[in-house]
Length: 166
Image 1: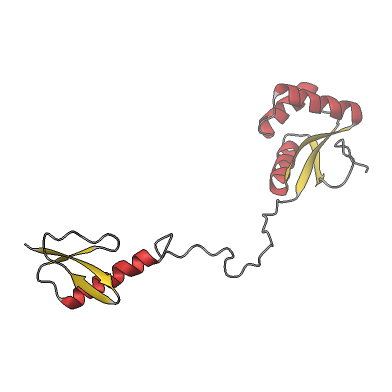
Image 2: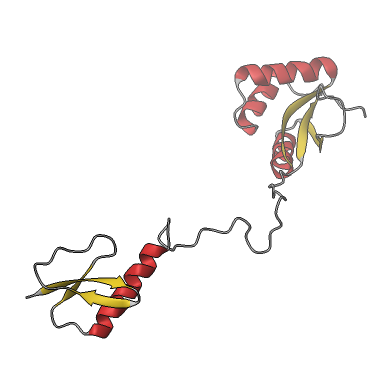
């Protein structure tokens, strides 16, 4: 099998003899018996791929996607926060309130539950947690089903210490 070395020069494919020193840049191999047309096509493809420069002719990702405006950032909005408030009552024992808080509100430790219960006992009201509305409603309903008095309010209203002005 004889292999000829060719190079695209001035719009024409040039083939050399087997054993010739291959040209430097842009060299390509043509199997013996290949047509001149296929050799020229390979030369064009090779030159086109080489001349594309850095990146090999691959288009870069556009900086701005269709439908977006430049300079405007899209941020995901957080759902509004709600406070779950525990009210003091004269019906439930303190130990029971601590047990219910630990059972209903996930992640509540014994110390946290005791502090919440103590604050509700002394001040008449204590903030149990602040979370999304659906979770706050779930906690409030669960506390009520266990016999405690609980309400929810949007986090933007009331005092910053967890007490409500009403």
